[in-house]
Structures are given as C-alpha cells and as structure tokens.
Amino acid sequence: MSSKEDQYARQATDWTEHAYADVAAYLAHRAALIATLGPRLEPGDEVLDLACGDGGLGEALLARGLRYRGVDLTQEMVEAARARLGGRAEVDVGDLNDYEPPGPVAATTVFHAIYYARDRSAFFRRDAEYTEKKAVFDLNPRQYRVDDVAQDLRSAGFSSIEFRPFFVPQTVSLPRPVLAAAKALEHSGPFARLALRWRFTYLVAASP
Image (tube, rainbow, N blue to C red; front, side, top):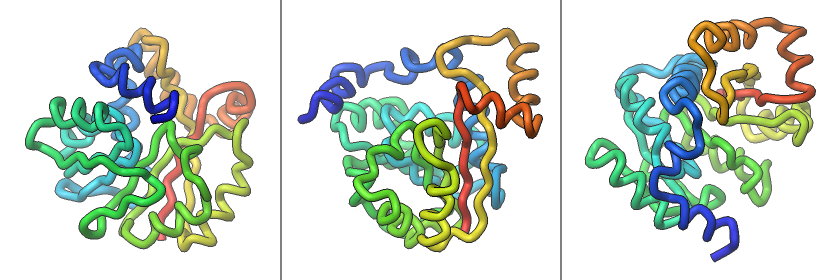
C-alpha cells in the first residue's frame, strides 16, 4: 500500500465530514452540475463515480433520483461508502485505470482524482467505451492546460465539451448570501476566467 493509500485508509471513517466545511452545500452544488451540465441526466440514470472515497457524493446524487455505483481503490473507503449508502448503491473495489462497470452507464464522474490516471488519453478512451451521456470531472487549470485536456477528450470520442467554473469552496463554509453570490459568479465570463488563474477549478462535462 502506498503512503497515499495508507492515508486514505486511516481517514476513511467520516472522510466526507472532515473534507468539506459545508458538506450539504458543496456536494449538492456538485451533484446539480453533474445532472445539468451537458446532456441532462434523468431520474433513474446511473452514475459511475470513480475514486468515490466514502461515497459522500452518492448521497447527493441519490437524492436527485439517480442511481449510483461507486468505485475506489482503498478497501477501507469502499467499506465506509457501503456503510454510508447501505443497500441504495453498489460500491466496488477497483482502480480507475482498469475498472469497467457490468454494463453501460449514463455518466461517469472523477473528482480530485484525474491525476491518478496513468495515461490520461487511454483513460478517456476507456471511459468513452461505457459512458453513454457524459463524463464529468474537475480540472485545475493551473495544473493542466485546458486545451491539452480538451484534445485528449476529443481524441477519445467526446465531441462536445463544456467547462464550468466551480466557485463553492471546499474548506470554508460561506453564509448563504455569499454562497449564492459565489454560484452567480460562476456565470461571470471574463471575471470567472480571471479568478481561475489564482484559485478554484473547472467542472468539465464531455459527451459523445
């Protein structure tokens, strides 16, 4: 087990509650964008969440009437996700580089984990084979060139790509008026792109 995997194993219990200052606000906003950015997900559509951790996002997606399947490399995280979600979802042990679901899924999500792809182009090609509507993931534009990632997605067969700024902070709980303003600023065009030079991430939705 790598040092990173060992860290995740030790922190699996209540990972979500420790990772996010305002769990409900952060994950509900992420789930809303997963459902609406790009082709819309409908109730009953299945979302495959690669590197799912303890399944915190699963609760927010299930609340929207979606089906959820989680996958994580760390056994302790998988056990925590199963305990959190009970019989409402399937959660498997697996590496995002190699895992294939039992059948096609409407959407695939990968958060805080795209950098675990051994070969990003190969990862997107595999994803495209079983994803029917869209792949959704977060992207730090200060870590990766947006044009390079877009090219990898197109080469994998994703012809439509949307980049949406995501300004709800993970480690700070905002008062509700400030939270609403942060969400509004995601639509601010040039200002949003300027802010992304220093902080925050994109949410990317790529569809065939």
